[in-house]
Length: 255
Ligand code: BG6
Image (tube, rainbow, N blue to C red; front, side, top):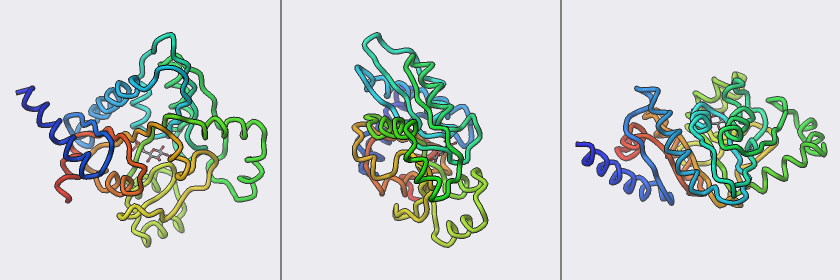
């Protein structure tokens, strides 16, 4: 039974990879919406896949979220030849401490026995503050590291869920509604076509910077995220997706 189940998943992975034109898809059994521990299984699968990339020197940028937090929990120490530096992909985006990129990045470094650098920034920045912070030597240094990241690990969220979780203003909520935002990643909100309809202004990796990274891994699952995953993946760059069966089935059934 187990063998049949696994080969069924491999077929699902292949179909989803073609469907979303990704380079690689990893699917864990179950639906993390129904069984929360499935998120740890996604975390474990992502950490294992990541490990294959981690020989030599790497700067690894990570976003916040409960899913990347479970990737961090599942990381294990690497070999001696590894020289890993973890950085948050972007500055404050209005998350609770345990779900912030900074926290996840330091956990990953501790578990993988690497180093880390953090960005200490307020959540919502005015344009003036943003521009003057960018001139701070300490910020500049971390920014350069972030831009040199060869590996990026990120979550994908449902637009409404993320906007509410960030206590966004009613003006932002209305805008997202009006623009029919369905997905969120890196502080950017996307409509069904994968077009950016809104973004949170903060320092760090911008969407365009992703084209410089060699390995980009999205970790997102649960049937409720199917639409968000499909929308974000239209935007490219198209890399590795770690998800669960719940999201995969819904994505492939197109409902
Ligand atoms: C946030 C990231 O911290 O987590 C978002 O800033 C991402 O870009 C979100 O979409 C995903 O959260 P979760 O808890 O669903 O993994």
